Length: 93
Image 1 (tube, rainbow, N blue to C red):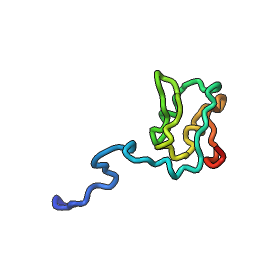
Image 2 (tube, rainbow, N blue to C red):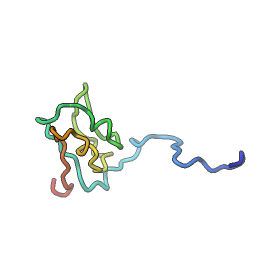
Image 3 (cartoon, one colour):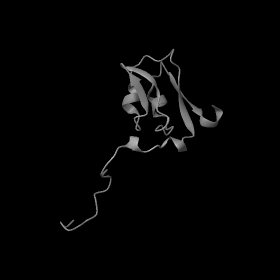
Image 4 (cartoon, one colour):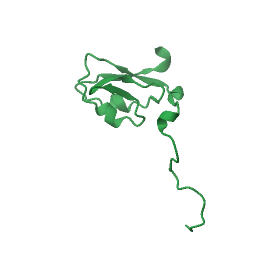
């Protein structure tokens, strides 16, 4: 690459964050929380690729549906003995 190349590097975000864009509109599945089962381990929060897990005072409070794409990572990462998060078809809700 030469010094005069004006093309930006791939994957470079020049300004803003993912929260500037509502991306939940193409979701086919949505996470459902069983609050009685949740132990607030927050593994879902760590693993969510969209930062769509809402927390307050170290506890899971819900999901940011404006940014959740329904990928199911939160449900897959919820500990097997707990399974407090499940995925449901968006139209069924």
